Image 1 (tube, helix red, strand yellow):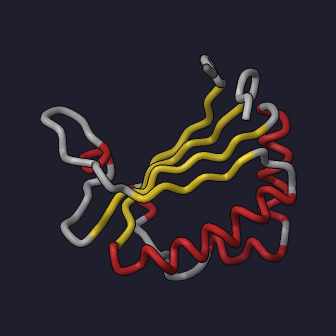
Image 2 (cartoon, one colour):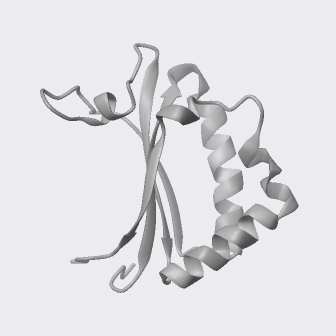
Length: 122
């Protein structure tokens, strides 16, 4: 896929290792909703080689506990305006009620996210 000129929402979160399969199923369901509303890509990755660093690291960023792994994910949109429209449509979709499930599968207070313009796509 050519990401040039696109917009990306990225996020990182701690996930209990015991909940990886349940999270995979959850992500597949909500990812399909994002795609239906216009997202170009929806990707969730589970940590495999995410060692703690001396100064910074994924584990440090989410205060990773011994029974957890890191999830690194992104959603690609055609533009910032489309991201805003698509996210609003997803949140209004009744199937998205699962996103705010109670209790959450992970500690949302240790999740971080942001929106990014694509700078380089080689």
